[in-house]
Length: 411
Ligand SMILES: Cc1cc2nc3c(=O)[nH]c(=O)nc-3n(C[C@H](O)[C@H](O)[C@H](O)COP(=O)(O)OP(=O)(O)OC[C@H]3O[C@@H](n4cnc5c(N)ncnc54)[C@H](O)[C@@H]3O)c2cc1C
Image 1 (tube, rainbow, N blue to C red):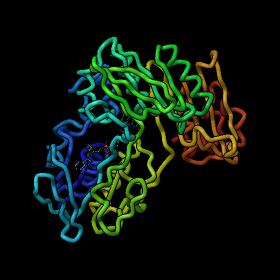
Image 2 (cartoon, rainbow, N blue to C red):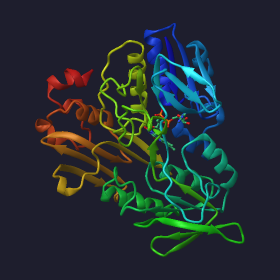
Image 3 (cartoon, protein in one colour):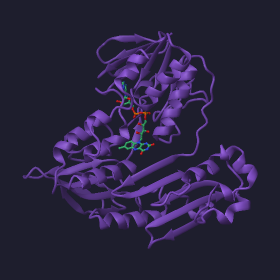
Image 4 (cartoon, rainbow, N blue to C red):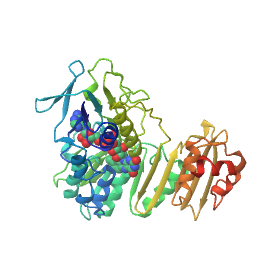
């Protein structure tokens, strides 16, 4: 069996593990547009901050590829797909035949139209190459503008502040990281960022700009405001990398490639996993689990992928957040909310319920029992008998009815 995997990150590596669990003999070839073996993508901000180094970046050691007999084609891009001949075309003109193919191409940075600016004028915040380039520019005293106050914009902001830059965050929505943070949490974190010297501009965006005579960037904002800076980072999100599939008949694209419950894209032998898959969320554990299951299914397994609630732990400048599932519903959506704020708003904990079942949670700076809340959400447990205790200090297994904690949740 010839396995070909396009992309070389979390989904790809886990797919190799899934394949090898069922097939020790088939050949595995990974096509990697980047010049590196898979690395921990979330580590790029720590690398830029000097908290980790190049040696600690690999997602798996090189021996992993040797041990599992995986052939990695670094610096090669898949540019075409012939599903009838079962061949992938590469950018060097060669073709690679496959029996089973995995699309694990992840996402690429979304860049809005920026009149007067070219790719040389801004940075994305997605790859190792992005931070290698950024490291040459980001030094103490530099002024940086980060467009987008979502998770990667916030991580970019943290790295730049840590390197001594003065940072302005520009966000189109009325609050930072709006899909995950409610108004309360966003206000709390915005206050914290401002105390760290970060300027936060909301309900505005960058339309374009120019380099002035000193080589600095002058940016025009939608509001009419102007900003002058040395560094511009564009971090408004990622778009699934589906170009390869755009002209292939029978593929269903809907902000990502649509897959069935076995992660097949509906064409013979072709599967997809990770951020390229429609429906998200674009998070590492989901890419890892999808990769593993897709790999096993490519090797003859028949496992269903059931998406759990999104789970994200993110910290910046000493502030920490954990969000699970639906963490920022609007009031009109009708969810029941239990929330508490302590220590002058430094600590915020919130639970979101629907018909007495937890569907989401948000924790800032205090995470006691986050794992237990996550299990209650995943298992869709009726919390009626212990709802009053849910946010109490010391809430734990002992508050749950015996049959629950002795059973599944106590495992
Ligand atoms: C700064 C940052 C911080 C993050 N922090 C977190 C976090 O705290 N928690 C969390 O859960 N997630 C986090 N993420 C998201 C997480 O990294 C992604 O969900 C995960 O990397 C997705 O893995 P993937 O394998 O689907 O694709 P990707 O990691 O996007 O990799 C896809 C690979 O495919 C390659 N490729 C694309 N097209 C082709 C082609 N045609 N030919 C060959 N190769 C191709 C790309 O070059 C890339 O190397 C973060 C991401 C970033 C950028």
